[in-house]
Structure formats: C-alpha cells, structure tokens
Length: 99
Image 1 (cartoon, rainbow, N blue to C red):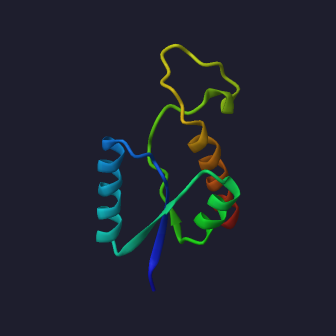
Image 2 (tube, helix red, strand yellow):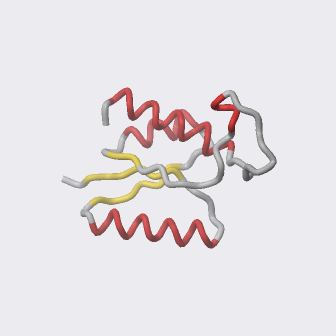
C-alpha cells in the first residue's frame, strides 16, 4: 500500500525549491510519496488533498492577521494570501475526515 502525503505548493524561489527537496526526501525515506497540491482553485485543492492519506503544511510567510481578527503590524512580513486561504480550508477538511 502506497501512502501519499499532500503538500501545498510553496513557491518557486530558490529557498522554496531547496525546502521542497528536503520535504520530499524525508517523506520518501519514510516510505511514502508526495503529491504537490496547486492552490489556485481552492475547492480543487481540497479535493486533491483529501485523496491523500496525510497532509504536511510547511512553514512560510506570516499568516494574514485578519484571520484572527487582528490588524497588520509593521513588523509582520507580507502574507501569502492564496496559501493562507487555501491551507485553512484544506486543514479544515482534513480535520472533518479525521485524517
């Protein structure tokens, strides 16, 4: 039985490519495979992720504070709104299925 781990796409800059390769190597060493989830269409991303056995949400930019009812502070980095919205929905779907 192949175990598949969903990971939302993180971006294409050099640091992200480096981190992506580290995640993939670690997951493959554990005997599973990775399915990268594109985030442009959130409902499609949720469906693709739910087809997997597990979910890895890697770190990234600061989360949009409006999700928590807070205002942006000048010390915060620029959030990735697409990742924030999509990853919250993917995570919520995984929780509902008890995966």
